[in-house]
Length: 114
Image (cartoon, rainbow, N blue to C red; front, top):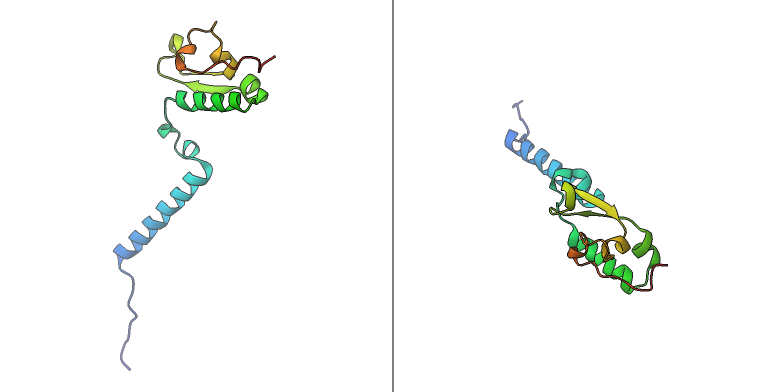
C-alpha cells in the first residue's frame, strides 16, 4: 500500500488564521464594550463639543434632570488650575458667574432649573 498523506496547513496559514481571529475578537469587544474601556489611552482629551451638544439637547427638550442635576465630566486642555477634568451640571457650566466655563459655549436655559 502506498503511503498517502493528507495536505496539511502551512505554518503561515495557521498564523494568519490565528491573527485574524484575534483581530476579530478585539473589534467585537471594542464595538460592544466601547473603545474607552478596551484601550483607555486612546480616548479623546477634549469632549467640550459633546458636552455642549448634550446640554443643548437637554435644554431644547426641557429635560430638567439632564440639564440641572446630571453631572457631566468636562475635559479640556485649558481648564483652570491645571485640572484635567471637572464634573458638574450643565447649569453650572452655563452660569455667567462662572466665567471660567462660559467660554466653552454652553448656553443658559432660563426658567428650566428651579
